[in-house]
Amino acid sequence: MQNSLEIRSSFKLLMLATGLTVILSLVPLAGLITYPFSIFGTFIHETGHALAALFTFGSVKDIAINSNGSGLTRTNGGWGLLISSAGYLSTTIYGAGLLLLLRRARFARPAAIITAALLLLVTLIWGSNLGVWVVGLGFAAACLAIGLKAGIRFAHFFMSFLAIQSLLNAFYDLRTLMYLSALDPAVPSDAQNMAIATGGWVPAMVWAVGWTFVSLLILGATLWVYYRSLKRQSQSSTIPGIPLLTELPPHAVNK
Image (cartoon, rainbow, N blue to C red):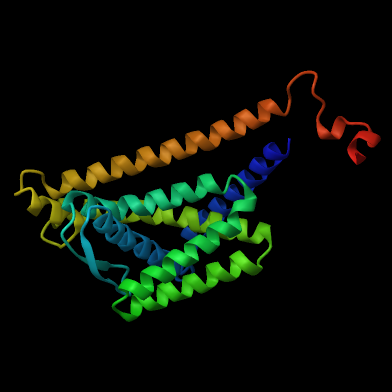
């Protein structure tokens, strides 16, 4: 019963965070509020490139983030296909993984602390310009404070909002990537890098569409798992012959 209540409560907070995101998208100048989260998405994107380089036995020189939301990760060696693909997919995976983790409210503060540790390490090791340091240290400090000091409900809401923002920014960026790949393929991008790496045999637009499709699959799988969790816990809490907590006699509740 506790798991059912916890997952339902998590779902309500997720809907609240989603509703707030939708409202902000409709309010003029609300972009000033969501701008830091957009830059945070860029940070996760560039971190994905860096980790992919390390996982494929390459190295990372540095990471830079610009005020317009663009970023650059300079790497040496490694598997170029995975490194270039990791940026957009990492942002989606981070947001989706965070949503699944937050099905249990008690995981919100640990998730905030782990996020803070990741941001701090990336900033200290690879940060090369002011943008990285401001975003990395700023969000690391905020997540650490939330993980150590905030109440569970506030931490849960904030991390849910961060997950939703990460997913939305991933798809916003992919939409922009498809637009650039179709209308101005000369603009430097991950998709253009892959087109060059394949000698033009696989155009930038194909890479952009492919990454969007994979991101949609990840999001769809995440929502399906979330739905199944809600359905399974709801069924287990109403099994015939097993009384709900509210149906137990007073002496049973007090035991």
